[in-house]
View 1 (tube, rainbow over the protein chains, first blue to last red):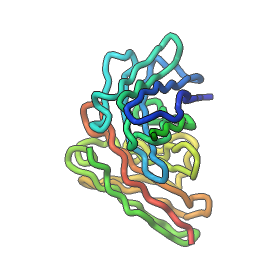
View 2: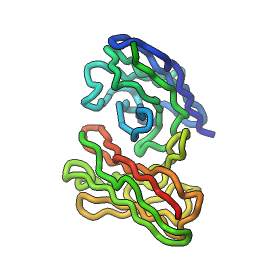
View 3: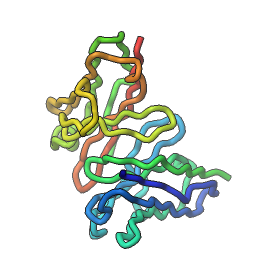
Length: 115
Length: 110
């Protein structure tokens, strides 16, 4: 059974940093693209970032480019999202998802940016 | 990277068919047959319902079908059931390894 479990969310002040993690199991993690998608409270889904299977290629939404960094550790089956210079508008539930198309999703971790 | 446009809400009676549209541009929906659809119940993770415009993952009811014409993709739910009442999102590949989601549609079963 495919499982994706996000962690690392919490309350952070504007301008602060946070590192999210997504622990994967039930599939060959090192063979799949992985993504982060976010959803602000009461709003729609927004694709944030993606990384290819061997971490040689990454992509970002314009809204986070230069502030967020996606990475992965294939030995530990874990996906990461380093978020710097956080803004109020980054407040959202952050989901990790595997594949292309985005197939299986985790349950999400809530990031709240507020002073 | 503008969101794809979906109607805010669509409704239908049990047993009827409804169609949700998803309008993009020639840079996303119109350029790639890589449109997917997701169902999301409140407080839950999205679930993949359709991929590559019209393909259904294993386990998804054949009441769900997808199509595309030009810059607009569509999701049709036939034989509408109470359990179909929730939110639906389209998603398209947008080139350079990026994706764009739709604005979301709330389906109501009357």
